[in-house]
Image 1 (spheres, rainbow, N blue to C red):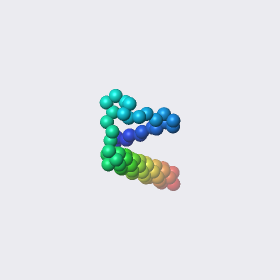
Image 2 (tube, rainbow, N blue to C red):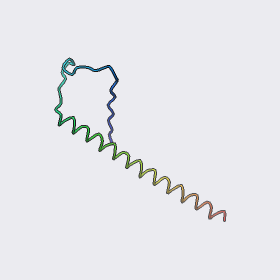
Image 3 (cartoon, rainbow, N blue to C red):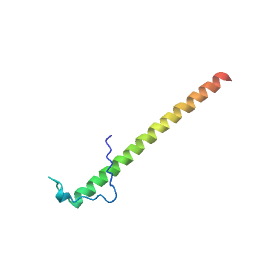
Image 4 (spheres, one colour):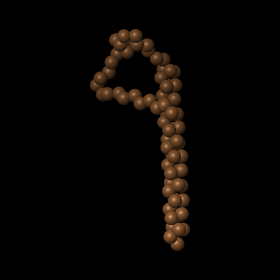
Length: 71
């Protein structure tokens, strides 16, 4: 998964028209990029949740196996 984070520093605004070769994006393009970014964040969150759940299940089953061996 690719995730993008855009860092905006306070007080360091640059005018896109002053940057060489800068292309202004339309409002629709910015909205689409924002929506894609949020969708990616949600997908990553679900992936981490699944991985954590799988790890927890493996840990619980290994603890159960150890406790059964000792009993």
